[in-house]
Image 1 (cartoon, helix red, strand yellow):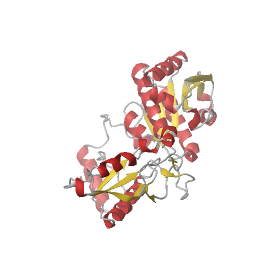
Image 2 (image 1 turned 135 degrees about the vertical axis):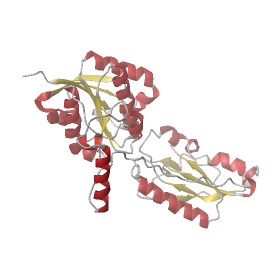
Image 3 (image 1 turned 120 degrees about the horizontal axis):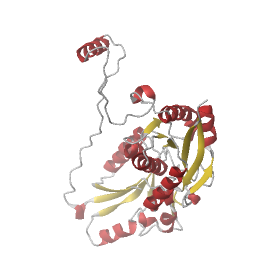
Image 4 (image 1 turned 30 degrees about the vertical axis):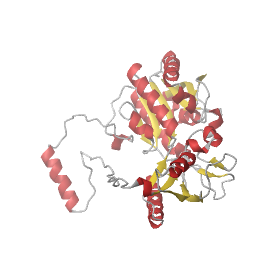
Length: 350
């Protein structure tokens, strides 16, 4: 019987079982065998593959010390002589997904390793790593772990055996933006006519050249007279009064809220905080003006450089926000601002 395919697994501090946001500065770590979700991944791999080691790093540490962290991780990975690197799955965690993409691309380019990961299609890590990795589409949250791991394991085993993978929509990974020529039983003209007839009959068919879809948002016209304009503050950074009276969620927010700031010259940390769950909010909690600059806008208002600051602050959380829901929030907030006679918006984001 052939030796099991050697695999190294990368995790962040949360999935490595070290801690949550408070452990975001966790340094690079290493342990033999599977850890956390790697236990279920090892089960999916069966006897054909073996997770020989797990490496990890805190999300904050990874991005603050990127070059050093990637170098240390590559050294640990290379020492295990794996045939494949598996990262994640990261679902829709942006920093984790981007870390998986950066490490995966480095492993592919510098160690010549095939890399498999799993991400929600809207994770920013997808665009950062799709050309160097095989990314299995997942649910937004870790509840999709059970569905993602068998697909990741199957692809990792095939890559570890040196097999070539077919198109992503057949094999179960997101398109990588590359094309590969092959001979088909039918020439292009025959396939084209078959697709056309299927479409005319209302039958399903699969195009051979899917076109990307891009949102086109026309820019708003410039503010003609800023010293006379009413300007509003809008943020997705989750700035709320202490106690979070409206229960704004730290991720996948279901609502937007607004708070009266008329008469306030500053957002005192004793009165306001951030409930955003997608980044370390410690510095924002120390000084909310780092993300919502009410103090500076009051100065501009007194100097006459803006006409008037709107009485309400509009707030939501963009962390893991479904695009359709975020678009709805935007339409609703814009309508409220129009009714209030607002001519300009300062939108702050994380």
